[in-house]
Length: 270
Picture (tube, rainbow, N blue to C red):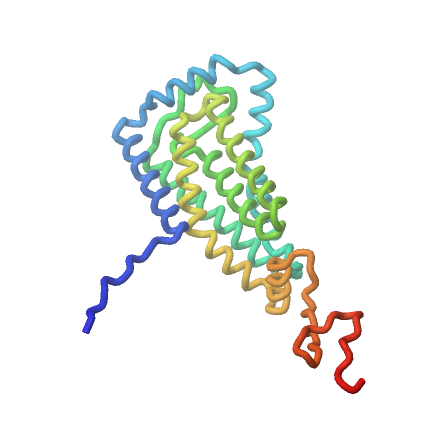
């Protein structure tokens, strides 16, 4: 009797792998920052010096406008919009979208709480205040603007990919990522963060989104009534086609499928 072979090894899902990788990266970077006493790394110092050497007034004004979109009330409005858009394609009534909006806001708010806790624990100093081109406060690592804009971009990208089919959704999601990268980049350009602060914020946001977006997806699916969910799945599987099933084709006495609009060949005796 042949014995059973070894059980196949479980392959981690992409989400689990992304969560583990981003969490490990954040842990390593945090340990390096703490072990260095918060002092900037070589890449931090080089990027900071480069930003100071190339800061025309017009670029500083534009960077201030862009950096302002990554904090305050704006990010919570965008998070709420993501929750609302997530159910748009299924045409869910407004009353059933409210739990999704609240869940999106909770995802952002809890992520901010984790960031603040990490920032307080590490307590890294910012670049010298004389180099700042915009007001900043509290500790530097991880960057609040980088973390927040990445979280909001992830929420918007998730919602847009659900609401817009095909290339439109992918292009819109890519634009969200470009916005988040721009907001983060302004923090180094304006002299208030080190590059490694941005990387820490991106790693934290990636880990948090990988952990929580599946939960938000469950809330969104529960908001869609069963008939609407079935209709939405039909549209996604065959965009641009009718959901009405095609009637079966009749067959001629010889077993050949009859072609509509054409008489079947006459049988014997006709």
